[in-house]
Length: 155
Image 1 (cartoon, helix red, strand yellow):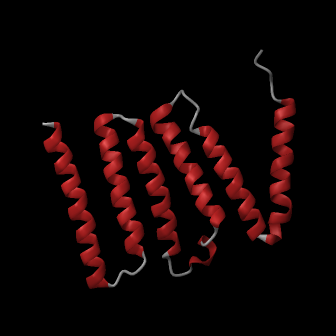
Image 2 (cartoon, one colour):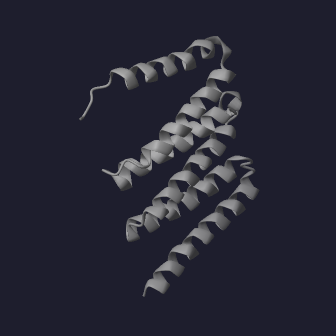
């Protein structure tokens, strides 16, 4: 029975990706097709997670959805604001936050890669936006340092 269900899900995913690809050729959707296909694949991972509750499906779906979102943002007509590598890392960080909120609470492990990738993304964004970037990232570092020094102790 499990074999039949797996083939059914995979079959629907293949039909959806092929149908979207065919539709993109007829309607000349251009670069938006790639992001939409990635979201279809992410949806398949999310469906698999909802059926099996294995965290690997949730992680894979979240990462593919983040990359799909980045591709879709780049396909927008005025995508100059979205060509940033910093935005890519921020989306990956948000994917880890999503994994924490949906699948691993109270275990905090996804928050560590989320924090690392989002701080790295903020650093890249601060280099790309010179008007406020000169002061924003150093200010965040100072605030993080102050928080580490003055946070309430649990022990």
